[in-house]
Length: 215
Image (cartoon, rainbow, N blue to C red; front, side, top):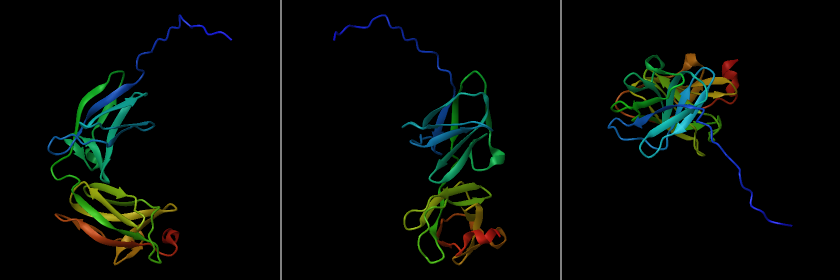
């Protein structure tokens, strides 16, 4: 057995085949929000990049198209909009990506955005914790959501004040909080009007046969 050097290998790196959407995710005071995923979403393509310590993101895209930017902050869902961040789809601003990068976007939260919270417990009919269903709320200002902890507790921020409905989806059936620990169909829902204070202490108890709500 012999040992010989191998010489003459040429390795040429190609230019970056991706175009990028680059910018900063900032709080209302202009401080970067770190370790948060920023998603670029088109009709048939999605890509993501986590923010660094300064709030900077650089989402690499392999396909041209029209993209919307989205993120979750403490369970609060936000779009990139004309005036920074927004919780509503109608105020979303899209970004057209061709062969050139799109840079220096400011994805900045509005004052007091994502500061109001909804908290409670998701329970089975017998009172045991339910942990395998995403609890969400949607309303006038947008939406928020959270996975329950082992004891069924959930807590998430919402974009702003307004009227919200709380629901979970079980086996494809959407079940709404109906007040006083009860749940039911959308027609039975109890809405919350969130103004200046958090909503806490919600007991969201599912029926014995959750899918029966949709039958």
